[in-house]
Length: 365
Figure 1 (spheres, one colour):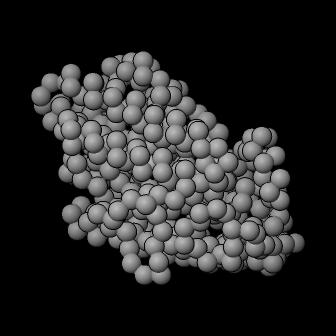
Figure 2 (cartoon, helix red, strand yellow):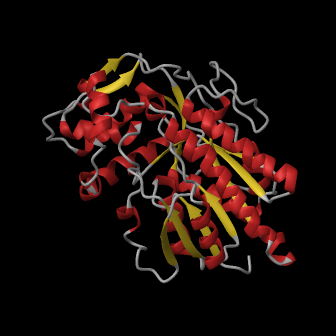
Figure 3 (cartoon, helix red, strand yellow):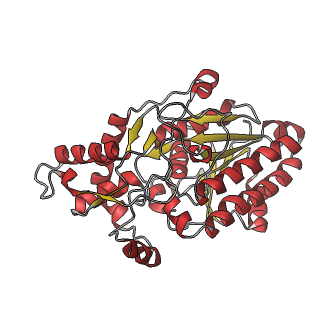
C-alpha cells in the first residue's frame, strides 16, 4: 500500500487494541482508531501507543454516518479493519437490541460510508483499498462430536449475538457481490490473551479464582471451543489484509479444542503453580456447575486450511503456552483489571441469576 493509513473500528477493544499495538510496533502505518468507548473499550490497553505520532483516536459510533464520513475524508485510509461489535452471548440473551443496532445497522452504515469514500478515490487507490470485516465461528452454529467449520459451511446462528454477526457477514458479502466493493471476511474461533474484558471465560475464571469466588461453569462443562491466542489472530488479520483476495472468506482457528471444564482446570493448575501460598489452593475446588444457558452450542472447531495454504499463516502459540502467558499477564497487570467494573444494571441481572460476576460463558473474543 502506498497510502500508509489504516482505520480500525473497535480499536480500544480486546482484539482491536492488539492490532493497534502490533501495527504501531512493527510497521510504518498510521493508525486511526474509531471507537465508541463502550464498557469493553479500554484505553489502558493502548497506553503504550497513546502518544505515538502514528496513532490517532477518534471517539465515534460506527452508526453515526456523518461522523464516519468525516473521519474517512480527513484521514484518507487505504484500508478499514472492522472489529467494532457487541460480542457477549449472555448480554445478547438479556437484551438483543444493542446487538442489532451495532452489529447490523452499524455495519450497514459503515459499509455505506466506506463505499462512498472508495468510489471517490482515484483508480489506483481504489484498486488497492481493502475493507476487512472480522467475524466469528459462531455464525455456523453447533457441530457434533466430529467435523469442522469450513468457509463454505452453512450459517446456522443460535443466539442473538451470532445472528447479528451472521447478518453483518451477509451485508459485507453483498456489498462485494453487488458493487465489487473490495471486502475480505474472516471468521475466527474463541480468542483469549492479555487485555480481554473479564466477562469472558478465561479472564473471569482467573479473576474469580484470585478472589476466592466460585468459578461458575455452564452445564457439565462439556461444551467445546477452539481457542486462538489473540496475537496469533491479529497476525492472521494482517496477513489477510496484505494478501487476501477480495470477496474471499478465511477461517482462522487455533487448532486447540478444549472443553469448558478443561479450560478452567488448566487455569486453576497454572494458578496453583504460580501462587503456592494462595489460601484458595487448589483453585479447582472453587468450580461450581450451574444451569446451562439457553441455546448453548455444543462444539465449534475451525478448519484453517485455506489461510494456511493460500496465505502461509499458522498459529504460533499452543493452548498450554498461551494460557500460561495469559494467566501470568493478569497476575502482573492488576492495575489494568482493577479499574474495570461491570455496570451496576447488568450486575443486578446477574445476581438475580445467582452469580457473583459474569457467568463463565463461551462467547467469542
